[in-house]
Amino acid sequence: MRQFVEFSWISLNKDGEELCGDSVIIQSSRDSFVAVLSDGLGSGVKASILSTLTAEIAARMFDSGGTVEEVMQTLVETLPECSVRKLAYATFAVLTVDHGTEAHLVEFDSPSLILVRNGKLAELSFEEHQIKGRVIREARFALQDNDYMVLISDGYEHAGLGGIYRLGWGWKNVATSVQRFVQTGMDTDRLSDALSRTCMKLYSGKPGDDSTVICMKVRPAVSVCILTGPPGNRELDSFAVNRLMSAEGDKIICGGSTAQMVARELKLKLEVEWVPPWKVSGEKPRKKGSPPTAKLEGINFVTEGILTIGQAVELLEKCKTIYELPGDNDAATRLARYLLAADDIYLIVGTAINPNQVADLIRGEPMRMVYIRELVQNLTKRNKQVTVERI
Image (cartoon, rainbow, N blue to C red; front, top):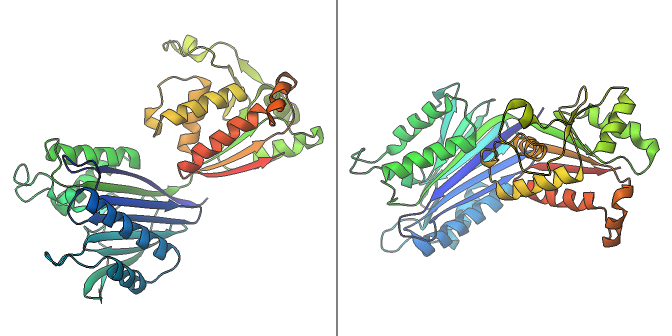
């Protein structure tokens, strides 16, 4: 099982500014992870443009194997220092992680990375370099399961200045807050929300500076495999079922005919739950038109196909995180919950034509594939690793 870097970030604009002077770039693939946080000098449009340029250059060059010296030379030549204040136009921090285990951190004039390991603040060993007159801090370290990492812009350090904290919240106090929050085992969505709310409160609802936080957590990747639709060739039924049962993680079936096929191949009984769960549990009624679910030994979730997938896509379009999903326990919400919780999603899509949906072929493709395409697009935008196999 591969190690995965879960992440979430939130930026707060300086009060009165439409654009944030901080820029964030995050690139996540199966084997690598890159997070860049750049803080442009000042605020507003100019700061936003400068930080965006800095983040783009740093992200692309480090991702393509550029050295610290090459990146800094390019930045210095592209973004000279402010002639009045003698300050760099933009600061940055770049964190790259290979295979979820080997981390490389480069910082230029930015607050240092906060690392919490086993509930305690871990101290990183930095090397300092003078490059083109600029001091660069660099660290390489091995990551462990359940490590939390947090990058902040200096707006977090300044929060509460002259108020609760006479000299501002400060790096040490922010780090202590991170340490306290992660003791609950919260995910990065909850952590970034907790930190940004605290920062906003310290600013009394009016941030005096652009303030950004990137929260990261190292953990095993969560996998889910979905089989929807019988194969185009019935001789491949057994092959499709074996694909599903041998896949890592949770196993889901979307489709009545598909569920019957799996039950037949596995010689198991399919138990359809015709009574809606809310009638059993006493929950409030769900939206109309939600399809029934079923139970099948060895499968985590069984439901109808096209309708459920279509409704799940609609939910994903409306929700940024799993916490924004409705509290309902209907089929579409449960499917959306599985998808948002997963990092690696494997879709086995059968190409058999449903006789009840032959009309869909007039438009060139079955309705199932229309929804699958929309689903893949949505999940890919969320940095999910999605694999589709058509059978």
